[in-house]
Image (cartoon, rainbow, N blue to C red; front, side, top):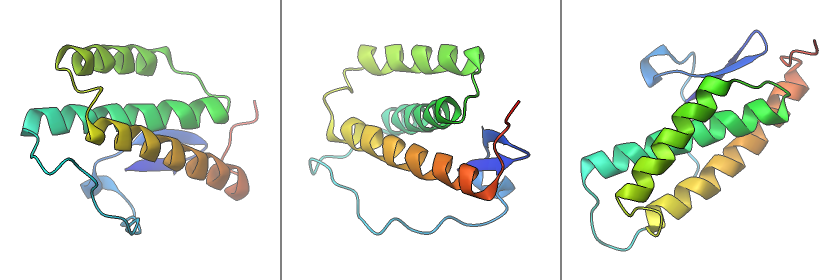
Length: 115
């Protein structure tokens, strides 16, 4: 879950979150096969990092350590052959949608650093 605090965007675990997110209303769209747990975690980490980076870019914040972690995760996804999976494609779409929403929310609530 992404959390906006004092103009900074950061990932927090669900247990640390100040609220529960509203369900998105659409189910998992997959190929019918199940993915192993490690692959699912890697794709989830990639989605989280992508969303966080896109929000930071839209808000004018830039953190090189996040780019490095995203790059390493992308290489791992490539090595495992996950880029052609429907789960990966869904994660990319969700990351973009959530980043757009979170960046606009930050702008509307005035939590963006203007320095």
